[in-house]
Image 1 (cartoon, protein in one colour):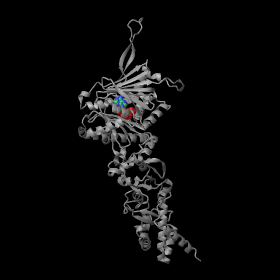
Image 2 (cartoon, rainbow, N blue to C red; image 1 turned 90 degrees about the horizontal axis):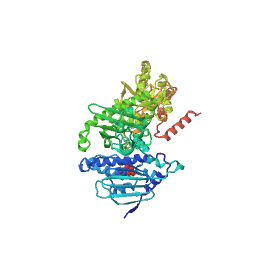
Image 3 (cartoon, helix red, strand yellow; image 1 turned 45 degrees about the horizontal axis):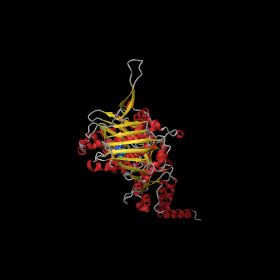
Image 4 (cartoon, rainbow, N blue to C red; image 1 turned 90 degrees about the vertical axis):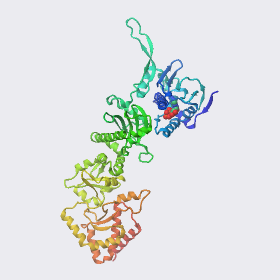
Length: 632
Ligand code: ADP
């Protein structure tokens, strides 16, 4: 008795979508079915490693039945039990692969490849009835599953001699109005073309009986038609083919299918290395970063193959965190694939490969930076932040590797500039690399601290990512030149004479400076005359060490500690009219200077874009001052 069962709700929805969509790529159903067949053989092959009874001459067979308008795909893979048919063909959740993965993970720590786009259901795009006949290697019984792709399917016992799966597609009637000629999927020529296009690198033979004609010795005789079993695919994985023979479209098609992306890759890096460790790698930079790239959940890793045979999906060892956005695979003959414990001993080999890949990726990126800046800019916008984290993490271990890949916009350039380019632009008398943190270029340009730098024509790197200052603190130097924040420490902008003058003033006016500082209490470490101001009266800077920007970032973190504070310094411009006013006030009544200090400090905070600690007090002080100044 056949059992009739309902599809799960999500499956129904998917089915509807699939059948009714005006999906133009109906032909991909064949790729999907061949993929499934190849996966099923992989699974059997994997089990046969420890249970040689299961081993077979693996193949995928395509048959065409013109009379009944049937296209048949057979494999001698692992097969499906009744339960698996119900669970795997009746749901969209891809649970079969998932469960298989889990089973493997528990046992051998290996995973098997799984994610294959739209999968089995795509057959309903071309078929109005699908029959699956299957016998699992683990069962004596075979089952037949059948569905018209509406809401239910039937399942019952049947006879099948050997393990494996046969899928029969009952092709739809041609629909001339919508230009759907389902008959074409019965054409040998079409099928050959599709296998070449989508499944050439499947590593098991895909065989079909094709029509051949004899070449008669006597010209008068007609050629005789005969059938011959032909293997349609080259079985050479795409990455094993020579670079020159693979077209951009083939790479793109391969990438999309293999890594479940609908967009073409931004960049393909295909390398073959022969040496102490030999390997082939095929790497891609996605055009669309994974949405969770910066979350802890993101799983980096490259697929690992041994001599074209899949071993695991996301090998983390092969790629460092700084290049975690890369997708791709490594195929090496130097691994044996059966036992996972052995895999550990291959660590050293994998490490060597990882090291080589890292160098290769860097050199390719540098090449791109030089020869196709537009593309590099696009890359950098997507992944620049990841590179910066790469420098910051591990205490700068990857600094050398990454420092020439990062870029910044600057006060003189709206295009990204590399550090090397910055250094090349440096003025003759410029000794250090200047940077400034801020939200936008305009707000940075307006900072009082920019005065003298603008005058001197020095370029200043614009830091707009929170990681920037932390990263630079790890880097310390580039090309032997120190990094200097425009609002931290001493800027070395003045000539010796000026410098001396300011030093002397700091000494001569120390009483006033001390009283100013006292009025501000713990808010500042020091009040002093500035060596960096030209047109502005005051500014707030910090001493070396933790900067104000870093303080802001750290404070915004969930586990912020109260004691992470920058040492703030209030700087006064000795050449500004304000200074003379202060002197006059101080001479007349030194007790008044305190309120001036508070006003100036708060003003400096405002200019810096920082929050006032006590806005009410500031406002009251301003009002008092206005009243005072305009007394009769
Ligand atoms: P996916 O392949 O992405 O998991 P599919 O819808 O294509 O999704 O297939 C669903 C499941 O059905 C597979 O995971 C697999 O367990 C099973 N399956 C499909 N085709 C075969 C086959 N030829 N042999 C054995 N199992 C298969």
